[in-house]
Length: 565
Image 1 (spheres, rainbow, N blue to C red):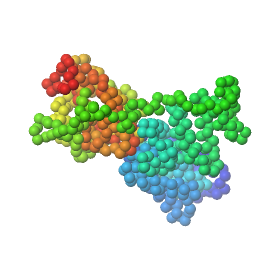
Image 2: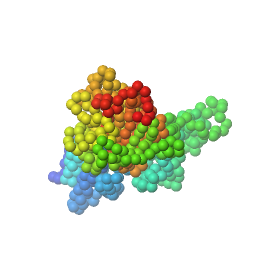
Image 3: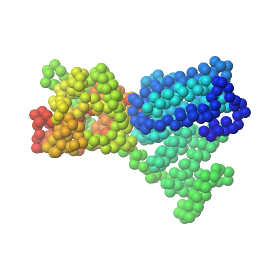
Image 4: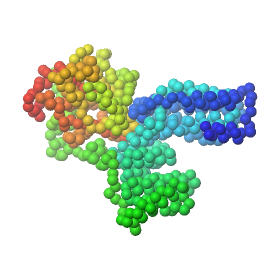
């Protein structure tokens, strides 16, 4: 708005004519667009929703193109800033809106959200600030843009971009991605655009906010290295701000003398805030006699827990594997069912407790139906206990999900197939169902699910929980879990069992199966599992949780646990 006011007061060319709207009309249109209420869409939590957003951006480019053609047809010239913006957006948006795999790269998602939040508002400001001469093309552009934003119920907000940046940091620390390559737009030889300065600055803000001190230093060093040959005034200002952030991290880590040394070159002619920081660090290092005479070696950083290379992250990378002795006892075979001619390709992933993967057990038309029906009721995933949502924290789970009931012949056939392969009752009833409806899940940028148990802690012999769904109220705990993998993922997304050192990679058409309860009805604590962050690709799964109800003759209760059962 400041830019508009400056333009209005400085433009001598502002006149009225029959095809121009008055300044008041301009401001009304401009405020109408900017005052549209942002929706907390959590769009970064689902690649499916991000793909829809990318497709919609194609319409935004069409609106911009129509404005450009309208200007040129009237023998006018579009301003230089708008021309630059159009050239920047034209190729990228065309690729983004037409290539379905574009949003399966986390860097592309960052660029998409950045365009919505910072590029398109810049287009709007420049359209309405060309000496404030508002003619028919500007009015048409305002109307079309306004209509688009009203209809776009998942227009991203800053929270989405912040969440996407945090997801990138999770991917970086989980899969040990090269920061230098990330800055230039490369992940595992897949190329994207280089990260702009404001995104790099946001990354540093988030690493510092998460107290990831070592991560912040690594990003600072890589950014400074990438700008060392750049001599423009703007890049030098950016360089100084990065050095200031690095010095602040040194100070937080109690390396105050090192922090002062970093800012020494700016103590005379640097920005005021930098000089103030320098004076503070010098004073504190002087007051502290220890380490006051020389710069100390920086090591043993006070790392944040998210930076620790723990067992779970090693499992996600496939670095931790079962011993040769354990692996030698695992087999692949054709699993028999009650129907002699129907067998399934079964792979043992763990012997005790048993974890299986059944290959090629869901067909393409069934996958399409589950995705389509679930997307109609998509909402941000949360933790469930007794059927009640407890939490949807970004630090616990990052995905969208919808529920699909077995109300048609296709889903009933899938139910019957699970029943044949597991030997358990999977019937959905109006009361006391033996299984829950399908929970279809699509993960977002770096989508993951922290290590957890599927148990609901409401055994069949206990009182029914009022918060539980009516169809499974009184049906007991989740005796077993069945997970369909409905898309291939190029990198990441594996299901891991840290206690068992077991990792199940994503394979389209396959399904994982295990029991959550021991045969005596007790919870098996070894079955804690989690979903690794998705690095490249879009991960779709469908959970089928099987309850205790109806299993008494299919999996009889035993007082003692036997691993061979």
